[in-house]
Amino acid sequence: MDETVAEYIRRTVLKIPRDEIKVMLQKWGFLSEAQLQTLNFHQIKDNISQEVVQLCEENSADIKQAAVLDIIYNHIYQNKRMWSVYQMKKTGEELEYFDITDFKKKFKRRLRSALQNVTITFKEYEDNAIWIRVAWGTPYKKPNQYKPSYVVYHSQTPYVFISSSVLKSTLPLLCQALIVASNYHDIREMELRSHSLNSLKDIVFKRYSQNFQTCTPKPLEGGNVEPENADIRIVEENRSEKERIHRLNQEVFGSGPQPKLEFAQYRLETMFKSDPKMDVLDKKEPFRCLIKFSSPHLLESLKSLAPAGMADAPLSPLLTCIPHKARNYFKIREKKGLYPESFVSP
Amino acid sequence: MAVLRPFSMLPQLNSGVLLLVGSDEALQRQLAEAILQEKRDFNISIHLATSLPLPSERDHLRPSIDLVVFMIDIKSKYSLKNVETSLAYVDASFFLGKVCFLVTGVGRVNACSIEMNAVCKLGETYCSPVLFCELELEGVRAATAQRLVQMLRICTGHIPGVSALSFVSLMRKSDDN
Image 1 (cartoon, helix red, strand yellow):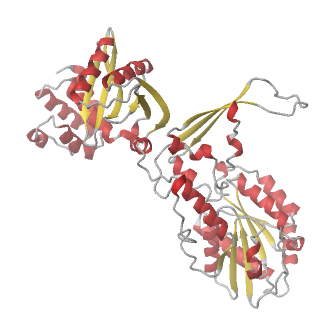
Image 2: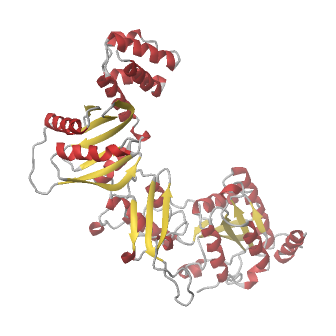
């Protein structure tokens, strides 16, 4: 077995928490049940990884198997990576039957024609998702297994989730291969990024509980705003105001849990307007400004801003449109003339 | 807009009415519950409001208020602004000892986003005591509740010989030192 493969397997095993190693190896399915029995999982991880490598040596593993183990690890720990959504477009309306083997073949052929030294690995999951791992090399160098790109593609949908390699130059190549393999004509980034792959899927597949403006169900009067005031000695003076906030919040965010995003970014490219007499900063140049909101769970925290009394309801549409527009990176230009600062009072 | 007046209604026997004004409703409610748990010999009713003026549709139901507590969260500029705008709707006679400022979040000075100076100045301008506390800690919350109950007791005139005005001038003396 190749030295680099052994080292790669060892390092991958070391990344896995000790009590999950066994389950993950079973999912991998490369080592037989009998071989797994011989492993002692009650020792330090370093020793476990050595033993695993030894068994892989017996089975003469190659980089393909090692890559599959890496996919399994990243599938379970997908929140450790940053995912970005891409949308593909067709010019015509033709519907085609999706053939997975054809997809794989075309994808590989396209990438290999541009770059010989790549490791391409596929793994299909039950939810129709195809995971693709690509490790990149150069014409003169072997693929770097430690800086791969991951792609999650759901057939029959125009969306691709990419967690790209730190090697930035590989992204156009990857996108090209994707549109060729899936018979699309164009691909663009949707400016929607998060660590939580599932939340991104929820947003673009519209699986989260959303409310449509056209058919907002009338909330029951006075219902479930707060647990009913048990103590008559405490009087809420602003009860009706609270109900209004609750209703507005319900309309904007819906009642279910929100998809998990970590940040939203607004880049301002607007002119600074001031009194012409003052003659300060009255230049024709755009006033550059970047506003970044970050939180472990951005949409939930936006949702609770108004009920917590930290902002006025309703919130700015710039903040609440994130799931509807499926993007969390915005550029604000002159013609809209919006100043997001004036919308939120932190 | 309706200005809050201390003697808009006849006071009730053996009871005190406290008005908590602050934008953080969760903390407000916790404090209210802590106050109600305090041992005392008179009835307390607590009114919670996010800001002043109070909605006028409840004016006829509201008893006369004995003590107004403005809650300021040191971590939120908005809470200070909220209190500053609300102060305009308080009748001047309240400031003879029936107002106090409660500053919470003191335990986390590194997350502080308003200047201590601004808060102290607020207390000075309105001749009212400023209490510092951390309402997120249960022990401090209980102690704060105790202080407020004691102040309410003075404001309602349940302590012979001490009026709200004399109490507040006592507090001021210690401030100036």
